[in-house]
Amino acid sequence: MEQTSKFKATLEAVKKSNLTNMGLVLIFLLVIASIFSPYFLDPYNLQSLVRDLAFISIIALAQSCLMIIGELDLSVGKIAAFCGVIGGMLMVTGSINPYLAFGISLLLGAVLGLINGTIVTRLNLNSIVVTIGMTGVYGGIVLVLTKGKAITGIPKEIYFIGQGYILGIPVPFVIMLVTLVVVLFITQMTQLGRYMYAIGNSPEAAKILGIKVNNIRTIVFILVGFLSSLAGMLMVARLGTAQPSIGDTWALNSIAAAVIGGIALTGGLGNPFGAIIGAAIITVIQNIIVLFGVSPYWQTAVSGILVVLAISFHSISTKIGERKRSKIKVV
Image (cartoon, rainbow, N blue to C red; front, side, top):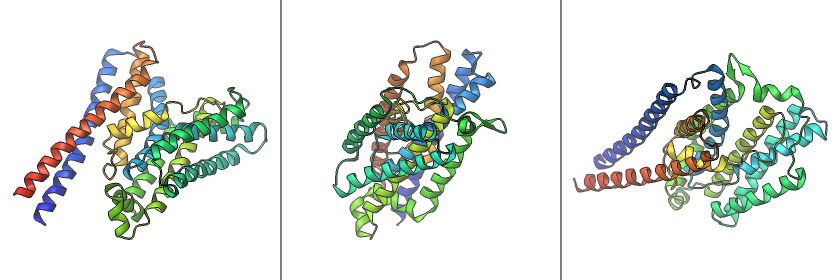
């Protein structure tokens, strides 16, 4: 028992140190940006940065939930685009109340998540392969519906959700904070959250304990679809148009943010709050790229580099943890 408690204490220290380290990296980037760019601390730039952070963070929170159970969803961006386009068409072509259309789109996102989850769990397929395929399906349908053109004429009543402010804070950021609280509550305070970590650590052991593994996995996929749709509709409200290109980079950025924030790709480890720190690091770097006059095309390359570096760091940290664990067993 004493050896087990020592290992748990070591593991907890590793998780906390990772969040601390990433927090220090974020602070370092903020200081560097404020020193070398006179525009970084400009109120308009900061509001724009916070607004951009909200979109990546919502998707990163969704992806982190899946990563906790050892899965990935590469179709999050196209789910956002699909629901955004359908929502836009309901508002413009269908003349439906914009807030009702918003709600229908959120339900549609949950349904798409259910489809992904059902295919993965009932057919026992790899989530990466399935969601790559569904990315093509959702993206193709979006192009068929829009012919590659943006849907304009979105009612201005809904602009507030994407462009407005509450006490000087962008509304998307406020919605992201609410989403963060809900996700943290689910993962850290509920039985569902405990089941998610158990499944991520060992699906076989979770089944032995009586956990309905496939049902839990499907529920998480539904949550991911819902949050992806939420981010997509917020982007529609921000742009005032439903663009078929919404979410094109969100899959990579969400994985990068979660991994940077300490969510293990192997499952069973990490805190969704870390994904917010990871998203903030990515958003600040992207903002720096723009302010320093670097080609915006470097943003995707930088996100990819960050993923590789974060995975490498996680791998090294895991090996160090295993060595400490073996030493504890010897003692």
